[in-house]
Image (cartoon, rainbow, N blue to C red; front, side, top):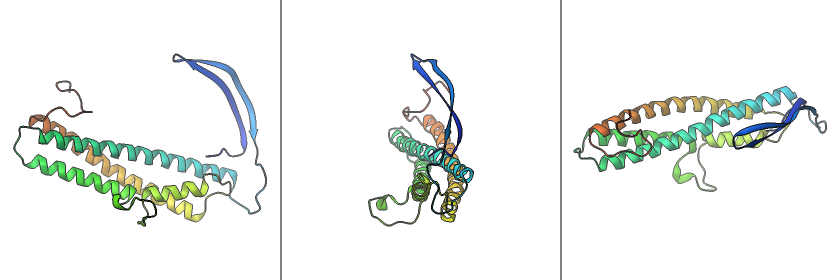
Length: 198
């Protein structure tokens, strides 16, 4: 995102072998609007505040994407570990299947159906597509957000909050399943704590 007009400072440092050395102290500079817009837009402060809200939402979205991907990989690894366990088929199989299904449903809510993720495939708006629309509309614009941008961002923020809670619940379920897998004699699962170190 761009910086709004105003007073700023800049300094220069270098890092060598983990040691940071200041090369030049803070120097003030001004960011000015290049030209006045033909159409009246939002104030610089309003535009900058929206950019910061968008950046915060992007950070949450990236974190949710990463955490969901790790949880899906963790569940897949658990399924493999259970197949290699000495325990008889039963409740653990069902619980791991249910966890994988729940995580897949979260992925669909976040990114849309996997079968429709190709170029040009039509799908309902997803968190990712809504966020992309907002980014595209305001990322290089100084006019400010439209009502549509504000509405889309509000929807994304609400949906991210809901999905984050659901993902935390699934992560808690996976943690419980890891303990049950260990008790069932399943092999160590990559990414989990080393056996005997809990």
